[in-house]
Image (cartoon, rainbow, N blue to C red; front, side, top):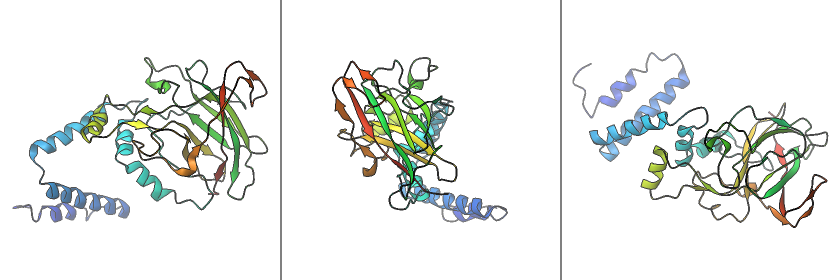
Amino acid sequence: MRNLTEGNLTEAVLAKLEGAADARFKEIMGSLIRHLHGFIREVDLTEREWLTAIQFLTATGKKCDDKRQEFILLSDTLGVSMLVDAINHRKPGGATETTVLGPFYVSGANEMPMWADIAGDAPGEPAYVSGRVLDVDGKPIAGAVLDVWQTDGEGYYDVQRPGGNEQYARGKFTTVADGRYGFKTIKPVSYPVPTDGPVGKMLLGMGRHPYRPAHVHVIATAPGYDRVATHLFVEGDEYLDSDAVFGVKHSLVVEFKDHPAGPTPDGKKSATPFCTAGFDFKLVRS
C-alpha cells in the first residue's frame, strides 16, 4: 500500500480491519479510527502537539498503581465515566441512580456488623448513616451487601495518606431480615481530586476547579439484583452544581442532620455533637 495521503489514509487504515473476527471489536475500532482521524483533521494537529498528547498519556499511566487510577480520574473529569454510566444503567423509575466509581475504590474492605464504626480514629465530625435496602416495589432485601468508603474529615482517602497502609473509612455491611443497615462514620467533606498528576494539570489548563462535593461512596449488591455503584451527597455542599467529575444527581443528595450531644441511633450516647443521614437503596432485579 503506497502513496497514502491525507485524503485516503483513513480508509486505508479501516481496510485493515477486514480480517477482524470479532464483529463488536471491529465496530468499536472502526469508529475509534474514524473519530480520531477526524479530530486530528479538525484541529489541524501539529507534530509537537501529538507528541505532547503521547507524553500526557504516558505520564497518566505512570501515575497509576494499586491505590490510584489516574486513567479513571481522566475519564471522570472529561465526563466519559458518567456518559458510560448513563448508557449502561438506564434504570426504571424509583430505582437508586448510579454514578461514578471513582479512582480510590479498593476491594477487600473489612466486613463489619451493624453500627460498626468505619472511621476509627480518622479526623471528622461523627455521623450515623442508616436505612434499608429494598427492591423497586418496596420489599426489603435481606443479605444485601453495602461496600462503603469515603474521605476523612480532612478530605483524604486512606490510600492518600503517607504510607497508605492503614485502612479506615471503609467497610462492608450486610442487611438484616428487614433490609436494614446502619453504620457509624464521619461526616464527609468536599475535597479536590488529585492535582499532582497529569490530570490535575489538564484541569488547571482548562480553567476548572478540581473539587468534588462531599459524599459517601456505596456499592450495593444482592443476589439476583443489579449492582449499583453510587454516592450519598451532602445537601448544602457548595460544589453540588459544579462537581469536577459531573457525578451529582438530585435523588442522591441527602440531608445530614445535626444533633447535640446525647443518645445516638446505635443505642449509645455521644459526648459530642453528631449528625445523622438516612437513605433507602432500591435495587432492580437482574
